[in-house]
Amino acid sequence: MIRMGLRNSGNISYSRALFAESFNRLLSTQAGGKLQDKVALITGAASGIGKTTATKFINNGAKVIIADIHQQLGEETAKELGSNATFITCDVTQESDISNAVDFAVSKYKQLDIMYNNAGVPCRSPQSIVDLDMALFDKIMDINVRGAVAGMKHAARVMIPRGSGSILCTASVTGVMGGLAQHTYSISKSAIIGIVKSLASELCRHGIRVNCISPFAIPTPFVLGEMSQIYPHVNSQRHADIIHNAGVLKGVYCEPNDIAEAALFLASDNAKYVSGHNLVVDGGFTSFKNLDFPAPDQVQ
Ligand SMILES: NC(=O)c1ccc[n+]([C@@H]2O[C@H](COP(=O)([O-])OP(=O)(O)OC[C@H]3O[C@@H](n4cnc5c(N)ncnc54)[C@H](O)[C@@H]3O)[C@@H](O)[C@H]2O)c1
Image (cartoon, rainbow, N blue to C red; front, side, top):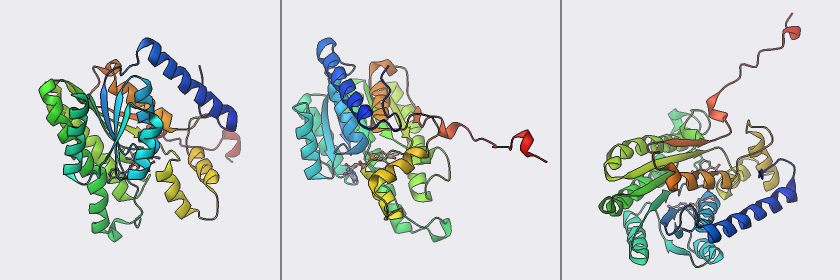
């Protein structure tokens, strides 16, 4: 088995990743991928987790609509991913943009099988609830929560008549446990986990599955931007190292591809009986705490 993201393996790890991706592409063209002929819309797919997932979906036979607020980057990404990727400008805070993106997918491909509400932004605000800036809170909730709800609403609008579909969202480990981020971001991500359960309860009657993924920290542009403000005196490689070293699973670290694999599973028929689930991809980080008692010979 190829293990990606081995620590300290630099170029070897990168070439293995490239080899694995080319191998997957070959498999999908020869044998039909896990998402053959499916149509997916991914918000926030111009970069990071969304872009990696779009690549994986296409390599597994899907057509992907890349919906992102960042027009230039979105167009470049779509060009890079080839003819099965199409970009549409979409600000998830504008319900009409989401509605248009969903209608665009249906008019172009006659169907929408997968809606991945992935767009999200970080938030820097004072640590204490006493100092919470309610205007900033509203702004983050507008993107991270309301944007995802609007995506689910319009996906459901076109999926219900067909009686099938898979809706995904990106939550976070910060929504699973308290204390991993400041309140606003944490609240926005725990809301996603609850919304997924609420919607799954209705949409199951229409054959539509609703799930989310909670990634551990990954050095995407989103996180690196935050890290550069906290540690302006070191470079992005050092920022990435700090993120990677925060993980608990020895020998590997969390990468966009790990989230794309989780999304591929949840979007595909392999997960045909999985709904209302939060798939936590964190190497076990949120599952335990160690007491770290001193060794017996160290206690007098
Ligand atoms: N990177 C991490 O450590 C991490 C961990 C847990 C969860 N997440 C979540 O993963 C998701 C993707 O983040 P990423 O790490 O890939 O970051 P990223 O910055 O690489 O990608 C985010 C994308 O969302 C787009 N976007 C931002 N605001 C938007 C809006 N209003 N409408 C449409 N698109 C918008 C951006 O242009 C960008 O392309 C986010 O929801 C984030 O909260 C990230």
